[in-house]
Length: 396
Image (cartoon, rainbow, N blue to C red; front, side):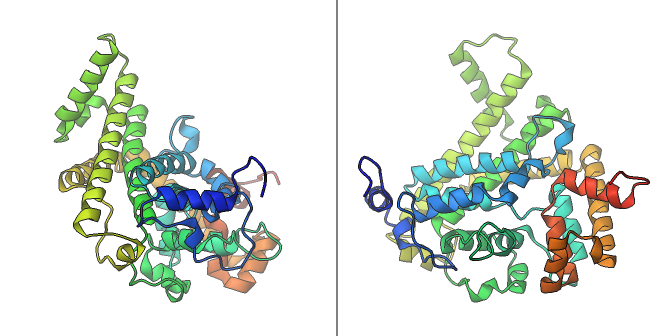
């Protein structure tokens, strides 16, 4: 024991006292692939969070596209800032529901580390290139990263995360992709996902819907007036006006401030609905403990019908007005071309790969090894590799 310091056993005891009976306690973790002594100060999931945040894959999210390429402006979201926003929402919801905040946050922090460069365009490009070689899907790739590709420990490959964090990533899976990597033999598909994993999934969706809207407004692809076509616009705008009135704001409040008020209102409304609806579902299904969560045959975390209709309406709006916009589609086509060129060239000439990945190709196979290398790239690294291979007289 360390005098005056909260130790792991004390933190675990506090969890048992304050968390709901259907929360996942750190002390009940199924452990790690590679057994290791527990830390004297951190619970299992606090330790996982540190390992994720200190990984190379997490740091690379800073230069991976969300929707708008990083170099277009300093304030557009990247995969990293999206992940932080999603984790903030997830922790808030977990706290309100008396779930394990550390586990929820760890799953959320790791949820996008398998994304390749150039956003969803990059994922679709690699999926097409790998369709005859086992496929590609970013959730399955996240598991490959935390289990195999990260190298931080001499005793084993991967980050050696707890079973529950890894299962939380797998429960977001494309099942076919994960079967390719053998995870169905480890995780039981018949058991319902932990509530912490379900909260992480919904928090991700709430975050990206609204920050994509915010970035599109910031980029000038949309103006606030364009949102009048949304059925919930009047209600949202009236809430913004009431907030301005309470704050004594000037009539000529800058549009960017109103935009922030609007986004804050929309996010807050969905978060409150998610908490209230989930509490209601837990009561209706008689969820008393973890066994009830595992036995559930339908999701226990979710939005009300009204909020879900609004979420889907916003997603359709974003697809039509933002994701199909020519500025976004140009970046999509460029990203696909970069990754397709790189994949073809490295498969033709694997000796062009860094030595570490030449060895990896020998172990995992040509296409999978090349895919792992490309998926780990940032946007700017992929562009730099493309220039080195295809530009005329590119400096070494």
